[in-house]
Image (cartoon, rainbow, N blue to C red; front, side):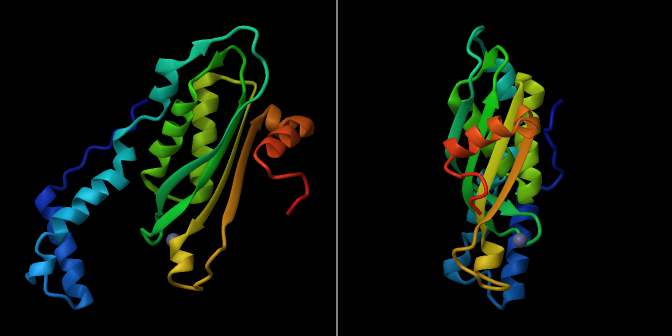
Length: 199
Ligand SMILES: [Zn+2]
């Protein structure tokens, strides 16, 4: 399944859109300090939204290792990410914690971080991103279970709207044994430092 999304928007059209927003805000895009801004913004967008060019499952399909015998939980916590909310195109800054209970396939921990990044570098809703990461691991590694917890702050909430700083949102998606077995779930939450009933 390729998730590559071709685009018919040229670089020049994207830069013109930035000039339009500058004019709309009351600026003169021809002012010297702003001349290169559209080019820089489009370049930054290429980086922030590079996830559309990536099929995250590829990281897991290509690089898993068979490790018959290892049947304990693998947990990667505090995976820092930057994303953007699809409602305001404002940054979402946070951390993801990922755990799975392997059958006989494990991946290098950097691959899990890459999966998080690939989904983060798109326009997102935190709940959707949490579920997407879990489903990608489930479908590609076929573990006994997957757990994903995302803890993030949304700049559309901290810098505008209700202006609440220091507020973070926590979402979780538990699949397989993490959903069905309270002890497995509790062990994972303990690993990442969120204890049962602690909130
Ligand atoms: Zn938002």
